[in-house]
Length: 242
Ligand code: SF4
Figure 1 (cartoon, protein in one colour):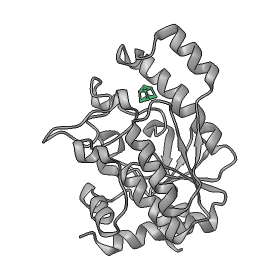
Figure 2 (cartoon, rainbow, N blue to C red):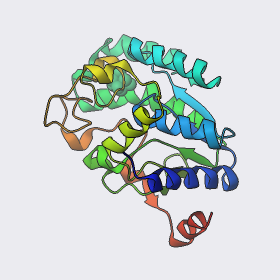
Figure 3 (tube, rainbow, N blue to C red):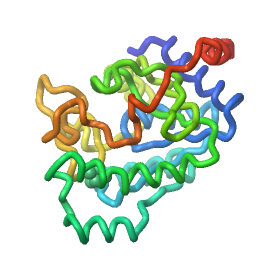
Figure 4 (cartoon, helix red, strand yellow):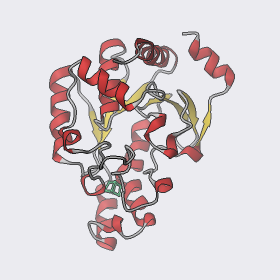
């Protein structure tokens, strides 16, 4: 059973974002964390627009979930796609699955398929809401509830920053929220189909993402710890009074 205070805290953050940082957007990848945030937004702050990045390499199960979300919440979620000419050039040069060859090529693929569409999605926005949690990986261990994102030049909010994996699943089950069927097959974090696998007992939540790489390189360029700065005390104080 999740501590009710954590739910209230997440709602407090979302309401503060909607009140003080319009226009604000939430990016969903249809992860369990993003399903929790989607549910909270639809209940309490539906003015926060939701979008997703469709890389073109997502598992079929993710598209099935996207359809369920549309029907359950009666919400239109815009999909941002990579630029066709950039994909054509990348595949022409490297082939379809070159991301396994080295980290640079993998990051180039992530840049074309994720980062560039995300830049367009965040353009002109004041705040970006995410479903990130500090416990997800060593690259996110210091995650605060809000921070300035230098890469995209806007405030970034993570209302589930202090939630555990168990907290997330409790909320999902308690509220009968649909989730990606791949979780029932041992997946713990789901991205593009060729870069995600199920994990085994004892592995970390993000172990199934780019499993052939070292843990400290496992980000796709969307959430770069080096590119963010923690919010100032003043900013934090203004948020916590809401
Ligand atoms: S996760 Fe894999 S397929 Fe998806 S954008 Fe990154 S490298 Fe490309």
